[in-house]
Amino acid sequence: MRFLLTINCLFFLSISLINAQGFGSPVEYIEYFNKEFALMQEMQIEYSSFLAHTGSAEAEAKRQSLLASSQKIHDRFASLKAFEDDKGIKSNAVKVLDIMLLLGNNNYTATAIDKAGCLDCFEAVLIETELIDKDVDKLGKAMSSMVKSIEEFAKANNIQMTDEGDNHETLLAKINRINNYLQELNLATLEVQYADAAIVKALNEKNPSKAKEEVKNMVKAANNASKRLKKIERIKEDATAIGQAEKLVDFYKDASKKLYPDMVSAFDKKGNVINEKVDLYNKSIQKLAKSTGTLTMKYETAKLNLQQRHIPKPKEKVIRS
Image (cartoon, helix red, strand yellow):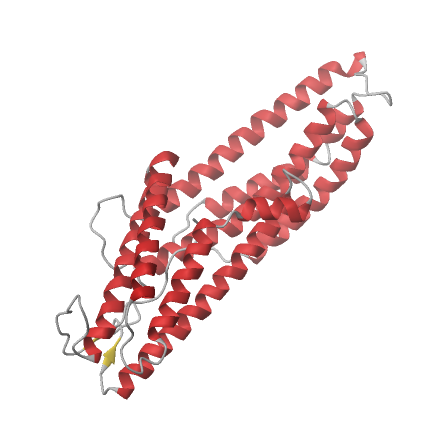
């Protein structure tokens, strides 16, 4: 699940206790939705905590739990009897949950692979990112519509609304900002990593002409990745991640000038390894594997450190940043 709820919870004066069977006042009606979305935020922060601090199995279990809870909240909204002239609060809340569940359940990867026409390629990554971003944008618009309907309902019923009362960034908004930043870094590093995989695949298939073309593609990929990184503004929380991403991309850019051409030159036109160049090929591929392994590990460690420094551990008390 690659979405997080970023709406700020709404607060207001003279809050009454809610009656589970109905709403005695407009205040209770708004507070009902406020509490449900506050619960959603807490669950999504907890899920983010599991993603940053635990293994994939634990995080996946928490993802499934979040989806199940989101579905229950959706169903409660859908079956709710709307308050008279609620300005669309209920319908907008249902729409928000519809999109959130779509984001959580949709297999964007499979759709992207089908559209790209390739199973393991950077083009599919870009398409998947575009598909997700499009639905996230729909979620943002649905959120805005819901907040507007709450404000209109409050105004119509003389309810004084307040937000969190200051300009402090919420914890969930901070988590979203960090994750979005890391996603941008990943797009840069993935482009060169996919290009590298294509070169290695061609060499393993003893197809030097194909490998030579893929080296040219690596030059383009490395240049694109460098441009992408230059457009990214380092966030204040990041000490090393973007720097490690730049080092990884720069290595691939340098490899396209020397290491890859040396590896390709070790094959004759028929795809046979030239005896005199066996040592050159072995040394080149060993250097490539060692360097990319080290640089990739440093990059992944920097990303993990960034997340773990700024995202609370599971069960840790959540406070506003």
